[in-house]
Structures are given as C-alpha cells and as structure tokens.
Length: 347
Ligand code: KDG
Image (cartoon, rainbow, N blue to C red; front, side):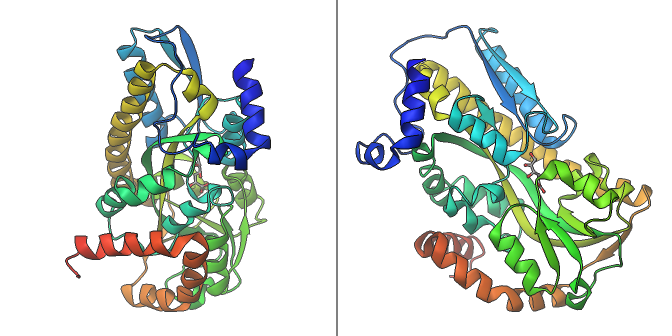
C-alpha cells in the first residue's frame, strides 16, 4: 500500500521529485530489504510467444527463476493479452503491471528522446544499433525514465521494418501515393509517410490484422519475423523490402516494483534483462533472415527497393528529420551521428 501511495504521488508531483534527485538510471534506491523474497512479477508483451520477442521473455523468465531458485517467478503474458504497448506502459506507471518490453516508437509521446531512433535509414546494421543503444546515447535516454515512474534495464531488437500492402508492388517513391498505411503511434513515422504521399494512420498493433482483413487500411510496415508470426501474409499481397527504419524494444520495469526490490534482486533482474536481450537479438536476426523464404512460400509477392529510391526518400524526408531532431534533442542526435560516423570511419 505505502508504495502504491508513493506511486500516485509520483504521478501528481513530478517536478518536485525530480529536484529531490529521485531520478537517473537504474541506480534508483533499492528497498532496505536484503536477500531474495518470494514474489511473482507479471510481464506482458504485444507479440506471440513464438516471436523472437516472446522467446526473449521466456528466456528472461528462465534466468530469473534459475538464479533465485524459484523464489522470484515471472508470470509472462503474450499477444497483447494485457493490452498494447501504451496500455502496458501505463500499467507499469500505475503499479498494476511489473514489466513490459514495448517498441520505443509508441513511447515518444511520453519520453520524446526515444524519437531520435525513429529516423529512417539511420542504422545500416543491427550491430550499429546495438553500439548506439548500449552506449552513452542509449543510456542518456534511459535516464529520462524514472521521472515517468519507469526504469529501463536494456534494449532488445524489434528490427528493420518493411512495407506490405494489398494494392500494388511498391518499388518507387511514386508508388506510395494514396496508400492507406498503418503506422505505430509515432509522429515521425506519420510525417515521413505523409511526405511520401501516402495516407498514414496510427494504430495499436493488436488491431492491425483485422484492419488489413477489413481493408480499412491498405498496408502496414514491420520486420519480416513479425509479418510472418502475425500472419499478415494472409491479408497482404505485396512485400517491398524497404528496410526503411529500425525499431528498438526497451525492457521496462515499473519504478514502484524496482524500488521494492532489494539491491541483490535488482542485480539479478537487470543482468537477466541484458542476458535475455543478447539471446533475443540473436534469435531475432536469425528469424528475420529465415522469414523471407517462408513468406514467399506463403505466396506474398516480394520486390526489392533500390538504393536509388532510398536516396530519393532520404532527400524528401530531411525536413522531417530537421524538425524532430530539434524537438527531441539536437545534442543527443549529434552525439549519435558522431558515434555512427566514427564506426563507419567517416570522421
Ligand atoms: O509488442 C509488440 C509491439 O511492440 C509492437 O510495437 C510491434 O512493431 C510493432 C508494431 O508495429 O506495433
């Protein structure tokens, strides 16, 4: 009860708490309790158990229960059983859920700094994304979370997104014209697709299949492993390998839950989130490599999207990047680009 009251206080009086320095990275105060207590943590995600994100959560559960000899158990909920990303994040802030691992994109409305990861063609590889997310830039963004009643423990991988639709193959910028495309609830993605002449609409993930089936939308964009795991090939005819943007997942725990853990418990949970994250990234890259042949076998028509057309998109959307990099933090954006240039030997 005491924790719940404190949680409510957090919601109501953020400014004063920040000043009192209750924020910043995961070094937030652990409970005075020592050792490991019997407890069950509830964890929810929006994707199926067989998806690499589900496999990662199952791995996390295995590690925690092993390292605590079953004293801490993880109740895992898959397939948006507990709601979509934004609803589950709200559950963490309200103390009704302990753990969720959303895409960072739908969270930009709450923590704007996550938006610097939503710019198209930012990362050339998963390894580049890992270096930025697991480095100082990624940590600086996680440090913004405690003031919102959240603690970020690690970044996992959703991946490079590709466009599917049921109208026509998209292999040029002009082909986006008028297509009704679902995006995550993310202002950068919406503005980018508007710039390409499409008609984008934001929508929670669990509503996408029905909207495609009912043709209230023409298309959507997700990594290949998600297009396969959620059977979008049943309601989509064309897959364009645009790889137009990379989406991270972020492993979140409720700050109320975190502060209730002993230092020892916090250490086990954080290390498990990181270890399961490495496992998940590997599983995700393997699944995305293998998914293309399985999708072709399911009958979806696949086309490449040329570098020439990608360069056209980059030019068209530069004003969107200029607008939002200012809003989300020019310094952080520059620091990220410096790191990427260095990795590419460009400076
Ligand atoms: O848990 C699933 C969600 O994280 C969801 O964001 C997946 O990429 C996704 C989407 O398109 O919404």
